[in-house]
Image (cartoon, rainbow over all chains, first blue to last red; front, side, top):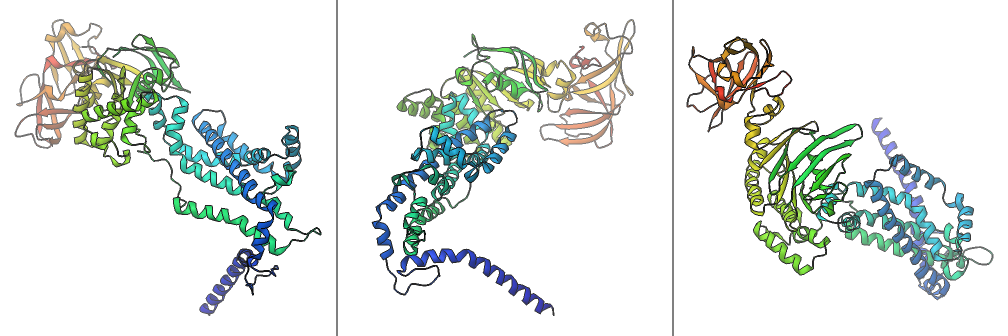
Length: 276
Length: 362
């Protein structure tokens, strides 16, 4: 009796896990097979005649390619640099200065940032950028994305900065360094792993973002890939599956490469400060 | 090379007064120790001199300059931290050269000066390594090298030997003293180890709960502790403090305990007159100033042996006297046995008397 129960529960467990797994894996599998099929549809099936024609068609679309190779990189790269740099400075200041109710400030910052973003802030952000005269510029997108990612970025950097013992900075101060030299020579090198984490996180977040570029950009020359993918839809509004899937695959490649690179180089271990 | 003067320096952290009205003059070229138990304010005082903390009130001068409001880099001091604080991502060469780098010294000169200092401290072969690859003693010498290389006016040491093992500590102690005597730079050394302070310093300032309790040369502080706190802190083992009663007659003076009565008439001129007959005092006598005498000897204090600790060069014997524990240093081949009744005779010339308040009377 007991073994029957055991076998039943085990089977049930595996069935549930398989279903959940399939739910997640199927779209990825589709992404791997559909671009190579001239007659691609929404089913996951190995192509009868694998071909690169879809890719050729996509690569011929200058607008879409520029979007992918230039605009998305500018926006994601700019956001990455802005977020990392500002978050590091802010985390350093927050960690080393005595601001009253500091913790409360940080938590409120995080709270508000998660509430007032994206859809909720769509109209105010548009109006703000419009009044700044920055509509239809990459700068607007970079600034808005950076602003949205900063609270979480600061939060992440703070832990890394806190882990550095203060005696390194004090020793540099007594050695004769000013605050900037202390930051550049002592803090920055030690906090580099944290900066890498924030940089990659910001890059990946900005890479796939749709709403902000969609609202703030007008001309096709400035559109990133997330918006440009719509150019592979027919006038009627239905997606051309072959082209959309090929473009989507190309779109994911840089992020996958980045992941593999970081994993190989750093192994995703997070080094804290080393106390001597 | 500079004199350091602290005038009525206070430092408060919220409700806590870490440094309480400290006035101190540290002479040029001398090695000065700030000594006291944990939490007495000695490290805070050192950090005030360094500029890592700003005094709540009071003034600090180095040389002829009032530095109270100046940042560390304007004070021309160098500090060796308890954990050495060698930058882990830089080589030893870059570590030692850092004070020169931030002052804009050209690279070639940095290299030659660092080489000189490294040679004199015997760490020249280690210049291309990282701090993590060095032993504790080597790291300590690298930290000292970094302090020495830019020839400051003042050296500050924050318990630099506490992370070393016992043998290395003794070697490093001798090396530091020799170094200071050679370069002649005014040095301030914070420690809780009284033997270290005694061995190294030209002058000691004993601190307790933020206040200066006594300032003087090591021998002065050792021979004439101003309070029972200093008496019990300096010396290993510390001074014996035995509560007793002063008995004054027109011709004689006695110290009376439960089991003994010492005639201290020869010391009468030195005993303050405000100690009346029957006054409660504390008698202070160091373990090495008590001699073992046969039973029945005059001027003897009886005690029962509680523990015997043979140290090789000497034997420490703890005894119960009047209910309190007294320690005596013996240099005999046959120490007494456990629970044996013995008699101790104090050297009257070395006797100290303290008021009930703890201050020195004689």
